[in-house]
Image 1 (tube, rainbow, N blue to C red):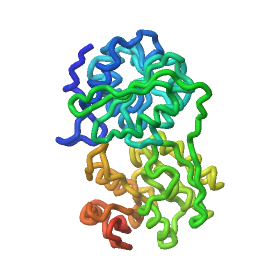
Image 2 (spheres, rainbow, N blue to C red):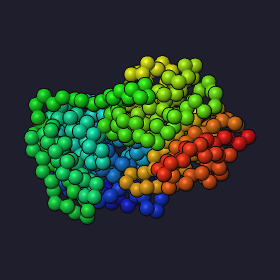
Image 3 (cartoon, rainbow, N blue to C red):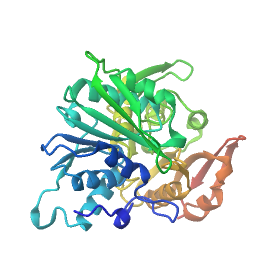
Length: 375
């Protein structure tokens, strides 16, 4: 199998000239791992963005790889890249299998390759899981861009492993090696927090934005739930930890809420948050690319706090993709309520693709808008 990654694409994820499907960390991780074991369940890949690390591991000797990718678009990109390389054709099974972030992913694994998350909480959740369930001689090899790494990452890994050391940097990337799982590691994720001022309990896995806290943009949305249109159904698009979905269901007892996110951590967190607030029976949670499960012209109310990063880059492409999807899904007269970073100035785009957009509230950091779908 070729190790030339120039043929890899991000599709169906956002593609742009300044976004690529692999980086120097993928190469460094595989070089630091060396010869990989060939047992069918020996190698695990966590955090692969679009397939470079998984396909590279297969090219380096792994016979089959267990994979966890948080984003559903990353999963689809891996499959698409594998198919372009001729894997899985003619009825053959792919030499990798996707798993949730649980014991089934790492049970008995001898090598775990990890693209370092920027969140220390997410790193802690992964480290605990590997230490508790992988082979006693497992090697956790975690790589990232130097500018996004900190000494605290070593400390987090050291809570679950006896030995932690760093590689030399190369092409602005570095690798952390962890081995010797500590005995009796306690799995502490997900974690919950009660917010008495809002009457909400938030439950979050390590990889969710804002964790079990509530960021100020979301708080702005919550303040204006009473002003949102009357509806029988509402959608919390890019639901994160499920704060908005739970708050909508609590504020309107007759409302059915669909919460959707492409992140596995977000979907698991939203289900747990809904259950913790007693509204699990009225909040349906779906892992999906935007509103792909919602019929065209059927949504009455969509609420959105869009991400403004694509990986490490500030990029409007993902938010605009979500706006386009909302425009398709909303019924005539349906509303999109959206909070966004004021500096990004999404209002002209919302006017164009949704319809008449009014500014509800503006602060130095965030703007809240309400857009009505044109007939």
